[in-house]
Length: 192
Ligand SMILES: [Ca+2]
Image 1 (cartoon, rainbow, N blue to C red):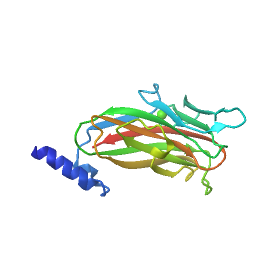
Image 2 (image 1 turned 30 degrees about the vertical axis):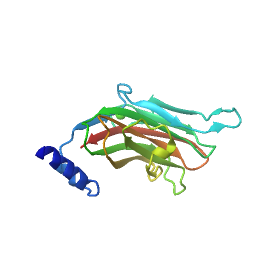
Image 3 (image 1 turned 180 degrees about the horizontal axis):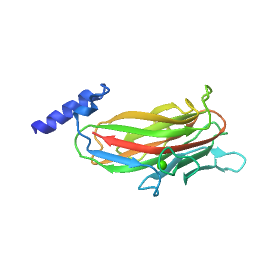
Image 4 (image 1 turned 135 degrees about the horizontal axis):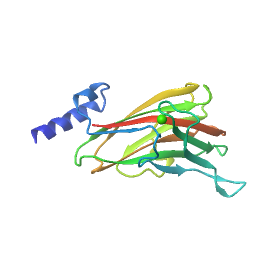
């Protein structure tokens, strides 16, 4: 009980302190480079209707060799954002200990076709006990066009208790009425 209490205490302290992750050993470590398939990553979307077709706007998440940060493949994210709204993502279920708070460190590389001061899209992230279904659940976000080419994004997300099943997700979200194409590679998830 002493050990468990200590881990819980360190986790609570770590919520607001960058860098103290090193005090707690990683309990889950996942890498995804999109060289051999999806490896359990599932696609999700929350997109508007296209008024010209009365169907959801066109989007796709697919394995691609067009761009890659490492290896020879990545995940291509395509989203018709011309309705000014929409979020698409990849999510993975991770088995984690029950009954204690978690710190989820998620990092990945995003390839953007341009550096832009206009807000075209956000990079978004999520960690929680249930699978995300709505754009509003992606409360962690950063502008997607900070750099032309590859740029690393990192999110630290505390989760109170995932009750043994943690869902981690990442993707892109429309911020401007335009067609979006990005690539994501070298995802790393560490849970402490
Ligand atoms: Ca790769």
